[in-house]
Length: 134
Image 1: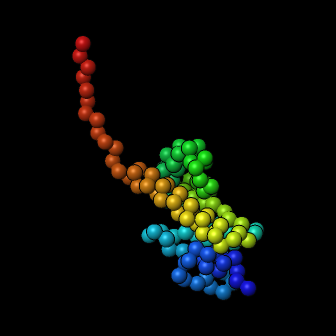
Image 2 (image 1 turned 45 degrees about the vertical axis):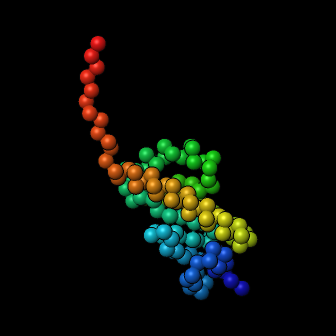
Image 3 (image 1 turned 60 degrees about the vertical axis):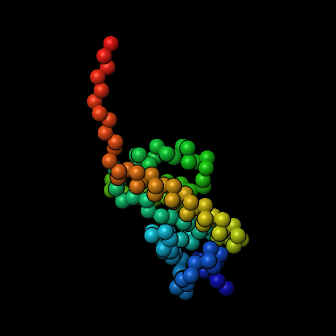
């Protein structure tokens, strides 16, 4: 009988196999790593968005608007230098189609958040000083 990780990898069409009995697996997706972990009857998907803790307050400003659009949640590792990451869970007994939809939605969410992080590293546009005259 396949493990929940093996069922998930099969459902999303991932080409590599998980090691026998694995309770977690790192998938290479879109030049990054999505970690899938089986825990407490759920499959937890996560992806690091940034290891720069200074970005966390800026990312957090997007959370209220994104809560209505996606099931993924922004989180941070404990400590002052904690990485910002995105996560979501899926029931490990979900149908293969539900697992695939959840994975695709999670990857779309990751793309959106990673675009925001990429924008943080771009320099702010300079606004030339202006003088207002009466």
